[in-house]
Length: 196
Length: 136
Image (cartoon, rainbow over all chains, first blue to last red; front, top):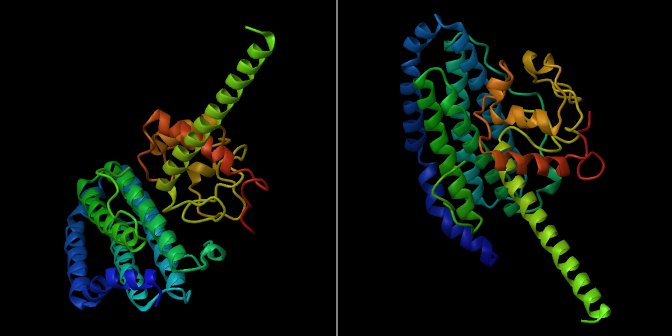
């Protein structure tokens, strides 16, 4: 094991073990269900405001598209053969979170009377540029950072504040992913006090 | 002061000025690229993602990137052509500039950041020079 790989392993082992615990996923699922539970009333409310609901559905569907793409991107990373055991566990844990985000967003779109975006038959990623584990981590970190910015840009646009809260909840998760990936790359996990 | 010395001084100042401009330009591009990082959950230069690839953006009719099928009707029917001016208007507040767009994003509100982003995009999206168009 190279020095860098050993260092990565030391950084990631406790994280991977924690993330492998089923409880973590169960808590997130419960959280998503709780957030969505309130959407029945929300859907009923927004039916009277088709303009607002339509706009919210478009924002949610765009977020859903990005989440589905993230799931596919982590799959590419997982199947690349470039990841160590610990990093692979981490990637699969993060992919699981994105799957949960996608499920929550799709359910909300449907509850609001919209048609949830389906996964694309094929995604296009710059796989020719992924030569080693650090490349994969950097690619994933870029997607996560973009996701943080996307949710940050979506939060103030929702007609319904409850939906903004759901988006902010997902944003927090993406920010944790980004920080952990940066840490794994040997970069400052939290480089600034604010995100944009 | 001799004419030769004055000539050397002018040449020196000119070189210094060019170097300073190049450094400013590089810093400006870095700033634009950093702003673009906010876009990469949905966009890439050479691949269609949740949003269309940006290679070939300037001069392209909005909603017409070959091979991208995820456009909103609002974008397809806008009649817009992407120029620095239309990008500036759209990126400042996408949903206000083009009601019905799928780009559910509040926008790049800072004028300087937006200008840097557009300057960087202009450099990074030249087909065959700085990028390759997505394969159909």
